Image 1: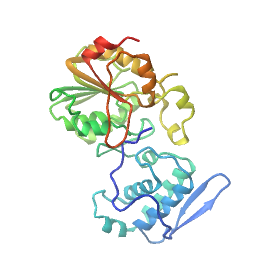
Image 2: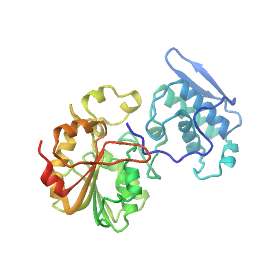
Image 3: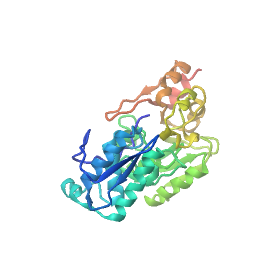
Image 4: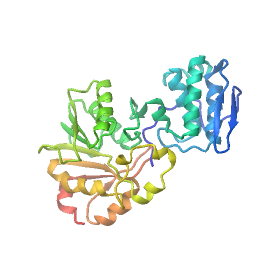
Length: 332
């Protein structure tokens, strides 16, 4: 799974780390438990120690980072309250107080022994350079949509969108980023899960977008009134049965409602393609992520004029199609 909801880069860190003292390792029969020396410790050696333990535990990443060092840095920065824009030399030399050290130990141990994604432990995730509240009611943001939003969907949008729809909004991160990038647009954010919408409401309030961003409980288009959107964006469930059965422990912590999409991974995408034309403006576009289900989609709709988007910063499996293409090219 792509990890495009990445946390901001921590300057000065890269692959690999050296042991710097201040932590000990307790070996159980089936796990490696991190024990941090709660005496005075500074940020960089603390990050190095935690990264070594994460690497030794062979954790799986993809929920904001892709390696143990960045994961450890995220944990320490978040708990210690260090701003990501802080001067690296000053931040790495900072002493971490005992209370923060104890909390870092608790969360690091949970990350290792229970393999809970760090975003859930911290109750935060990053998407398109923005921080969002998340918990186990929603998927952790990681979509390549972030790059499309930052680029304002150039060159695909013919004009500034006035009405935008986000299908399967989850935490609301895509809808919120869209509302911020297109300040003149009204955004509807749809999800079938009331629990997910409760999380999205926290984030909408945090970004003070309640006047322009409407949360709607609906199973895709089924609960929407007839209206036309300039842009429909969707990161729906698209994991097929085979991939669901092979998910690692970290990904099994996420709600299956946001992942599973039948034997071929297309149960939601089929419905989106069937109904999208009725909700698009004449020059409107649908942009939808299908990830690893791209081959199944192309085989099922061989005549559809899908435009497969490319990403500078990683990610794949996102198509674009306009209303005319939906009307003319969808024959399954």
